[in-house]
View 1: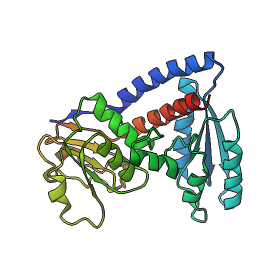
View 2: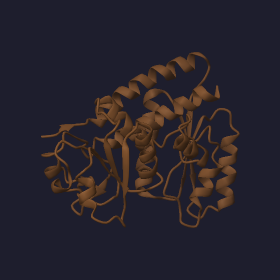
View 3: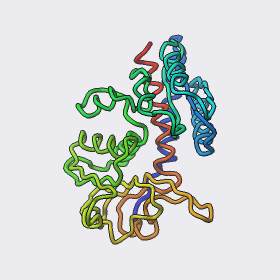
Length: 281
């Protein structure tokens, strides 16, 4: 039976360490602050923003929320971003996605000052990640790497398979694993014979958004399985992309849903805000 990777407990430990850093910064007159922009009335986004606000409050990071209407024009969004870029009291800027379809999210990410881009989505940070320079790393991939490190799971020389090629998780995570000298394969909706590839993975990361997609027969004996998916079933239950029941019998380590990757994503966001405050002081 697989050992659980407890993201909740690890995130709590990281938050406690960050609180000490924030206290030290405040003694020097630096008050780390995160600005969150939300466009429209997406219910899930509201919950995420509330959780981010709560987490900031817990470690002493100031938080300011900017709620824009569903019909906000692109130039209005860019004007707000520009204003926040120029505010010295704000160290991190986060644009909560999704945003309404009439707005260009890539253009918005490009507009955020890369030194305040705590989500790691500005092309400058993405480029720095690819060439191995210090940068802000997208929070979920950053959290996954932290988990592997904390549990002493060797990455170097291992076959790592990432299912999903999103700009938010799949692509940056592949870069993070490459930087740790893993041999990385990315699978996606057009991949042929996916189970043959997954069954050779020493480290398997599922980030495709399909409930219980990864079954036990698709997983190598003693593989490390990281489940990034969060899906709500018809009966309201939260499940991941991994069929926990069958996979946990074969894996050596596995992340639960909820309580695995989710708490780490917010912990890494806080980490990036504190880093931005230290960089911009």
